[in-house]
Image (cartoon, rainbow, N blue to C red; front, top):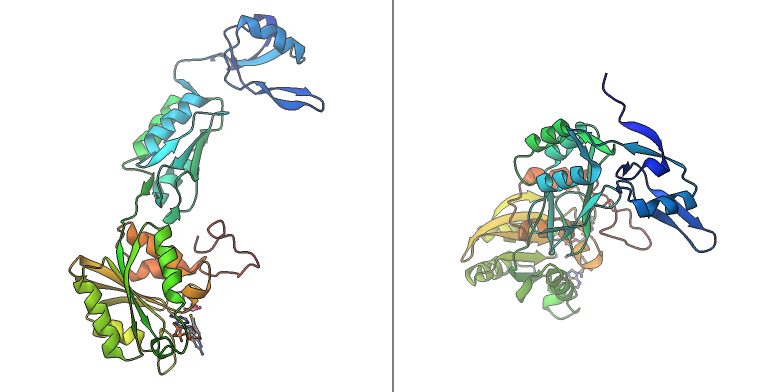
Length: 346
Ligand SMILES: Nc1nc2c(c(=O)[nH]1)N[C@H]1C(S)=C(S)[C@@H](COP(=O)(O)OP(=O)(O)OC[C@H]3O[C@@H](n4cnc5c(N)ncnc54)[C@H](O)[C@@H]3O)O[C@H]1N2
Ligand code: MOO
């Protein structure tokens, strides 16, 4: 039988051994915290301090071949799962976190993440995949559960990884053409409110609105405006308003008339049900053409904030991707909106 890994020894004999737990010192009214951390290798000068916090005996783990300490194990995990544009922290209490090194789309290989977590004793926790994160946001953490883990288990984890499990996809800085439909805006009866919202939303994603054209509700005029932006090299065209059920709502047919291929009209996302996704051939290549319903202008978070970062990250979206948003696609309209720290579209 192999020797037990955890033994109890008098603290005076503990020099050179590895602490298996944080040793806490509490000074009433002053401080509470670890005086030595789990994993610390005990030095001669530590003995008096350990005695002063009441530790006459210690549990120690004895390093053994084939076993890896939690800090080194976390290093192995981060080396395996970490992809591009991430910064890592130093190990703390056996755990390493990853932060976004730039604004972008967090992408997680969820099947591989699940396979790793299924091994047992190895844990990797992340934010949800395919959502926009700002630079500096902590996006994932990883650690093993025991203080010492079988090297063979870490090797099994390494074998599961065939590509980046966690990465940030930087967003393209797109030039976006905005076509704003609606006779009430075109005629000057009301002032456009969509343009300023989109300028702000695209700027927050690192893109710029290259221009805005107003059209009345005529299909021909809207289609022509879309084609003009495509010819001018727009990387994306968004068409606002006229997306729902009124007789004057002709934006979907105008997008079709522009020559764009419609992938999806109608999304299981509220706000955003009347969203339309199409692709068209323009001077900049194959570019997305979006139909944005009025709710995008009104709500802080809508389908726009979920789908546009994915498009700017270069993902080619399909109808199934929009359909999949239904589970989580319901915004409960909290009195104070905390998006993106909320379950919307997660
Ligand atoms: N009976 C139904 N009513 C509504 C439906 C429906 O299916 N059945 N859909 C709802 C949904 S979902 C949305 S979202 C809204 C708006 O959809 P539209 O994209 O068709 O928006 P419009 O009808 O063009 O305009 C609605 C509202 O917003 C004002 N607007 C539009 N564009 C601008 C602009 N550029 N600047 C300022 N204001 C703008 C417009 O004047 C209207 O007041 O419909 C629901 N209703
Ligand atoms: O397109 Mo409207 O989405 O649900 O408010």
